[in-house]
Length: 128
Image (cartoon, rainbow, N blue to C red; front, side):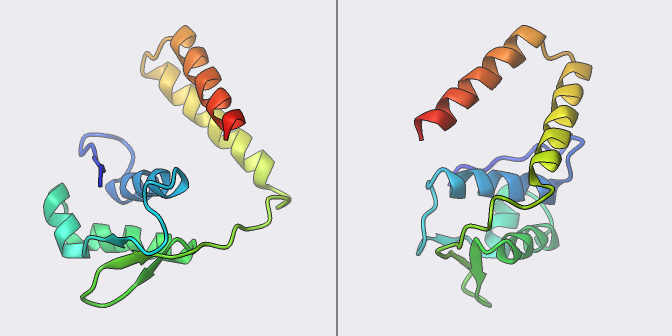
């Protein structure tokens, strides 16, 4: 499993773990039936406190991605896809995208590269 975190980033570590695992789950690099490392194992591998990993695992379990089993780590489960017509989903997405773009620009990420990266991501979505 390829999961990295940046202890110097402004994003909390538990959020980086959630986001990193969610990418692996959405891209089917982790599939139903796959086991995740135990909380303690992943915490040791990442060099973080085990409560940080436990918090991330609980959040993913709440989202329906994983099932938690005491002393056996976590297991990826078949997730029911929520209704995409949620009233605030599009507005929430646009707000988060605007915030991410603003953060990247404030940190010096070139607008031309950002546009190129966004177009590549859009093309990838259209191919799937």
